[in-house]
Length: 496
Ligand SMILES: Nc1ncnc2c1ncn2[C@@H]1O[C@H](COP(=O)(O)OP(=O)(O)OP(=O)(O)O)[C@@H](O)[C@H]1O
Image (cartoon, rainbow, N blue to C red; front, side, top):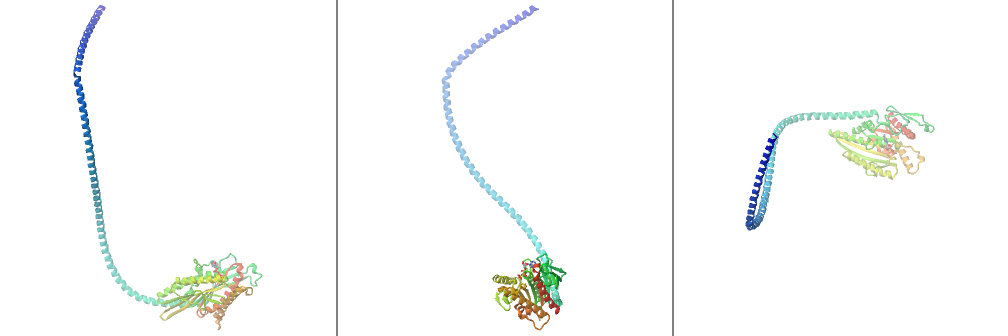
């Protein structure tokens, strides 16, 4: 076995060796062929070298020629590009123009569409208006018919109106007659009292609307010889709380008497500062008797004008100081004031302002003249309707401060003033007494005040004395004096 293996190996080795020898021989043959081919190639190369150089040169020339042609082509291409760009821009601008034109056309189109819509709406509105017109026409026809009916009714009611107006005139006449009777029943002279709101003291006690109790304050008990308490009765006593409207309500029927054709005098009496001017004139927010009376008379006049009356109103403003009378509009001394025609309340207010200014000037010249002088506002009413006539005057008087200073203790201007005031106020008391006790002789010539007012106080005239008093204990003596004066005036009406 081992021998067999050894033989096989030897055989194979022999085979490999043969193969290797064969390979090497083949290789050598190839190498020989190759070196032969290289020698051949080298020989060929040397032969082709000048040709190669010619080819290279030709190639270079070709390249340079090609390059210059390429440059030329480039330039041409750039030139063409610029030309085309110019053309493009030209076309672009044309395009823009065309676009703008298209836009304008579009806007025109939109406008047209809008106009068409508007026309359609106008058309609709026109149709609506035509319908409305038709309706109005029908309504007009109806109204025409109604108007004719109204004219017929109006003619009928005109006759009724004439009848009613006649009845109204008769009623007015009767109203005046009854109002006068009522005033006569109340007395031709009335005394009201108003307490100025200025203290919490209990010097004055109200007992109902007509009775007032005056208590003598402690410190005056020894100096006065009157009772501790005195009671006073008047037609009406206004408490401290009473406002301007409440006051006016109580005397507006007197003002009505003027419209009914009777003379009326309303006096505000009292010591300085007791509220006379406040009661008569008031202020911007609390109108007093004068502005309210003016309003009432103008209102009444309007009613009478509507009933066919011819009416004329005149006003005058007077001041009496130291027994001298002065017209506050002309600012001249006078015996009788000049009455001025007035159309309306505004004109009266204008004159009032002039009077106030003239009074203020005098006041600054002669120290508190307004407290020391009497102020008279006069309103004359004249009217006629057929055979009926009215000629009456309303006198609203803000008297000088009534304080009874001891004349003997005063000197100079104050002496003259006090004397004049005392004289005129006592003359007023005397005239009241003589008038309402029906004395033969009425001493109205005793003072400028009574002389100015006498003719408005006699006959069917009505007089109201508004006594303004203070409730402060330091004013006790003045309050007592005022109440006593008022009581004296009141007794005149009782004696009647
Ligand atoms: N009832 C009242 N309610 C409110 N204020 C009042 C009232 N009465 C008077 N006054 C005020 O008291 C002050 C004095 O009043 P007023 O001037 O009316 O007094 P008078 O009596 O007219 O004085 P004189 O005699 O000096 O003119 C004023 O400021 C006024 O506004």
